[in-house]
Every structure is written in structure tokens, then in C-alpha cells.
Length: 336
Image (cartoon, rainbow, N blue to C red; front, side, top):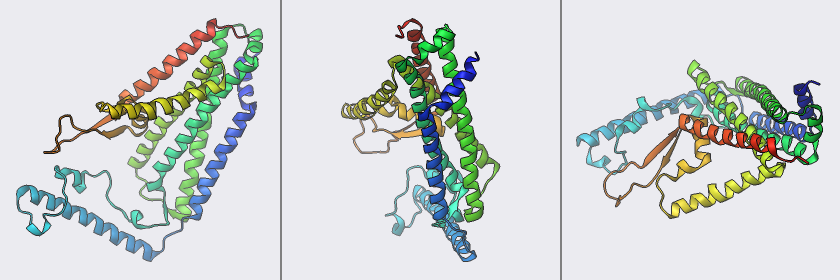
């Protein structure tokens, strides 16, 4: 009996998994149809007007930067003193900006693949994370609750081998589905950009940035799948994973955040799992906090950031710890 092949067939045959795949395809189809219906190929007049507005916007940014420097030097005319400028003029320096205004920014109703690919990819990752967590929880939870694991152990009486095979099968199939879905999803919107919108500036830097986000997203999907699997194994039921997720969101992400704000805790976002997820997915997440002892006078920068490295460590430690606990409990627990 090939244990891996048997687990692949069992996972593929589950109605819940098939339903989630259908919902995934339906969500993609609705998103693509909505985008296609709301976009059109811009005319020459629209493109000329958009280019002119982009040039004007870039010139406005340069003027604002020069006025900020003039204020620092004390040469700004009195008539312009009522304008707001940041303490550090480099914040509005056009050369230091991540991106400058382009024509696509001034074309309402026109889909631009270069501008919208990243938000669309975030949507895909969010759906796949939910998909992986639910499928991982239901896959092992249903078998433990129905006695399917006990029947399987009659054929292969090695608990840890069976559980590891289930986890490996889950992660492998989720990985394959995530890669196929990602290629089909992005290719669909690339075609929409080519035929009913604008492709935008698809430079090498764009594809590298998109690929990096996609890679981090796939890792996050696999971690979510393993997390759902581990919690359901500990609780012996799918609902254990769902209850744990709901309890965490309500008790800590909402209630805990409120308590931390009441006691005026320093940098409360670093204690939230959602902050580390955002930092890992985007590469760096920036937050703002009040300055200690700040009376409202003088300049104070209360910003701080979480980077992807420490965020990944937190996610790996959490997921790895729960997986190790689930294997330890499964090894000794009475399954009947």
C-alpha cells in the first residue's frame, strides 16, 4: 500500500476540498469579469491628457521640494509660509520617492496591470491562506473525529509516519494548487491589461518585486496550512482550529490591542501576529506610536518598523512549536 498515493487520493476526494477549489475558481472568475467590465482601451486623447497631468504632477512635486528647502534656508516668500512642509524635506524629494506619477494614474476606468498586479496578488494570497488553513484543519480533523486515522493505522501502524505523511501530502498539494492558481490568475490579468487596458511599465524590477511578494505569499500559505493542521490535531476536530483562530482574533487582536492602548504600552503592534504577517508579506511594515514624555512641543518621530526577517522567525517558531506539540500529543494519545 503506497501511503502517499493513498493520502493524495483521500485529500483530493474530500468534498470540502472540492468545494473550496470551486469557490476559489469562482472568486477568480468574478474578479476577472469585474475588472474586464470596468476597463477599456484608452484613446489617443485620453493618453495625451493623462501624460500632461502626470508631467504637471511631477513638476508640482519638484516645486514643493524646492519650497521646503527654501523654508529651511529662510528664503521662502511670506506668501508661501502658510503651506505645510515636513521637517525633513527629503520626504518629499521626487528622487527619493518609490514611484513618480505616470500616465496610468490619471486614466480612471482603465486597468493597468503594472499598477494593479500587486494588490491583486495580495488578494490571491489572502484567499489561498484562508484556503490552506481550512483545508489543513478539515483534512486531519475529520479523520480524527470519524476514526479514519485508526483504520489507517491498522494498515500502517506507525503513528508519526502516518501523521508526517498526511502533513507532507497536505503541504505538497497546497503548494501545487497555489502555483497553478497564481500563474493562471496573473496571466489572466496580464491578458486583460494587453487587450482591454494598459500593460504599464513591466520592467525587470517590477517582475522581481512581484516575484518576491509571490514567494513570501506561498510560504505564508504553507505556514497557514500547517498551522490549521497542527491545531486541529491537538483539538481532534476541525472546529478546534476554527475556534482557536476566532478566539485569537477576538481576545488578542481586538481585546488585547484595546488593553495595550489603555495602558499606553510602547509599540503595541509588535505583539500582534497580524503585524508580523504584514511585515513578512510586504518586506517591511511601518507603524506609529506616541513619543514618551512628549508634551506636544518640538518634533518627535514616533514611527517604527517590523522587517521580514524577525517576522519570519516569529511565524516559524509559532508554527513549528504547534506542529511539534501536535506530533508529541498524537504519539501518545488514545485515538479511540
